[in-house]
Amino acid sequence: MKPWIESLLSLQSLDMELRGIETKIATFPSEKARITAEAKESEANVTAVRSELQNLQMKIKSVEGKAAAAQEEVQKLRIQSGSIKKTNEYQAMMSVIKSKEEEQSALETEALTMMDGVEPLKAKLQSAEKQHAVVVKNLREEVAELKEYAETLKQKYKETLSLRQAHEQNISQSTLEIYKKLIADKKGEALVPVVDGVSCGFCRLKLTPQTINNAKRGDITLCDNCSRMIYCPDQP
Ligand SMILES: [Zn+2]
Image 1 (tube, rainbow, N blue to C red):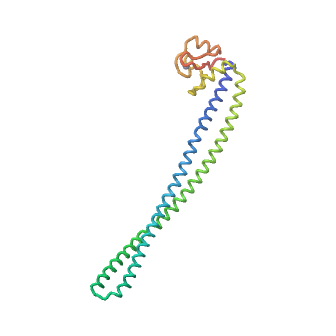
Image 2: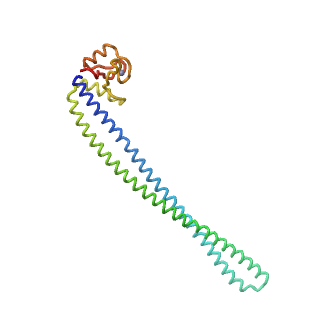
Image 3: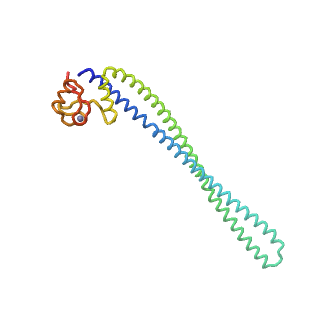
């Protein structure tokens, strides 16, 4: 193989590495977004359970308040009943007191029933908080790993870039220009081998004998169909 072909192949392989690094780096923003979303979701779960518990506690307080008011009312009515002389008025008062007492009792029962739900919710909150802590810890580790990986990739990119420059010096400017144009479409390699002695290694179509001859001589040769640069890999 002509030296320019060997140099261009080395250059191309470095460029493919660079492209791979760029692709990986390009995924970082979406990785970060995913991590942020996961953290938010986990936090939202804790918040939901916490407000569920707070709502229940508020409801209990409100029902307890109503029960206390009913009890107060009962006491007030009892005192009033002491000064009632007429039997029918007294009986009417007793019936009001009775229904108030029933109301109080019902409210107390309601509060007690609701209180049964407090402990399970507290346990649920505790477990949600625990789970959230684990999620946050894991995500922090993931972020740290991602940062480290990004640093490694950046370093690798730099090193690859400088290696690439050394190869560039062995290739003529015109060849480089053709190569750069071809590689810019990001569809694959710019310099491809002739396969089975007759076909382009990129588009797989058969090349003309003239084109194959040019390639065999080590000239800069483009595929008749896809215009990729071709070379004969088994040519001395
Ligand atoms: Zn081709």
